[in-house]
Image (cartoon, one colour):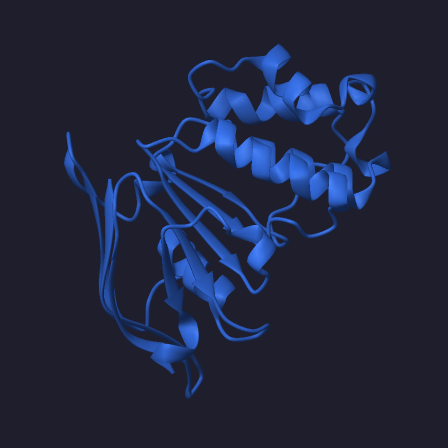
Length: 207
């Protein structure tokens, strides 16, 4: 799986958030999109995910076995965890996981039991999400993204609301689930969130 950005730009009204991005995210590598708060990192992730259309330029998604994938179909290859992606608060943890994995396949080697163990939330399995702490919710978001089958994993501010133990858990999650057959893209302004990354895209270079 490769994602190629060709002269990519996005603006709101007359203000350009970024312009003229020519970049390729390649199969098997880990990337960090870097920049201060408000610089456009989340906007770029949304464009990559297909939830926002570019104002200029284009994206090309290529699968080694299937060829080009349209933006309308890329959701099948993609998972995302971000502050603006909400969980269904009325579900219990078990219901949330079962619902999610009706639409996404488990990453190879994982099932409901394995995911719950990885979360380290066995005692909260029948607790409604609305009663979870912000850190517990963040763990659930990250596991849903990383433990679902898909060639592209997008993480926006992945350690939001995590304490020190949660940050160590996050690094372990990446090591266990992001393998050579996936693209990982992390949007961040904190070095602790991307020490494993191979390449870096600085959003301020495209203003």
